[in-house]
Length: 226
Image 1 (cartoon, helix red, strand yellow):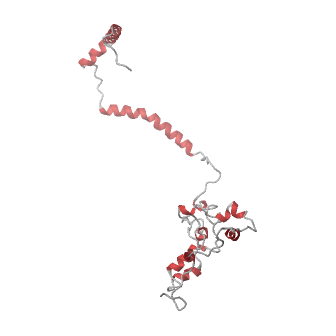
Image 2 (spheres, rainbow, N blue to C red):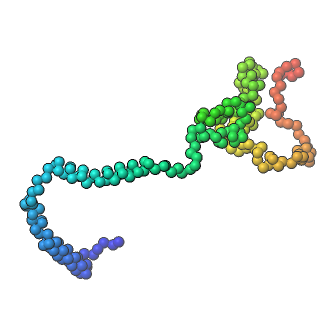
């Protein structure tokens, strides 16, 4: 909005008329309430002799009807039967019913006794499935055929959904429970494999596996290091 041009004659005339109108309204208000203004300015009002106790007494008396009304309505409401939003309100004993990993079919109490607990036990369900005792024995035996590395290698051959009840990292989202997918359940019974045909039809024909695919051969009498 552009600023008002105070040099414009129409603008000057507008302000003069508003100033005069405001002055007339103030003069009219002062004429109507002149007696009260003079009485309040000179402090010549009639003294009523109120004390602080009188003011507090009047304040309390004004609030007594409200207290009486609230006590009456409160006593009447206490005698009423409470209205429930639902017929059944679940408690602590019902919090886990139908929601545990056993109820949804992810765990078997016969294989993992830790998942079979009373409904009052509100501890979180286990995340890891029980370890095969055969794999446990690998940790407590010495190298080179046993040990921690052999144990981890054996565990990597197991699918993640066979080791854990739930996903533990974002990398497991792809392929998690792939056996339950549409493609795994509708896989053809006699699938065709064209690997040999494809290799035979190539220019160079079938080739041996690369060196890094072969197992490591330890030095011995059948291998010369010279």
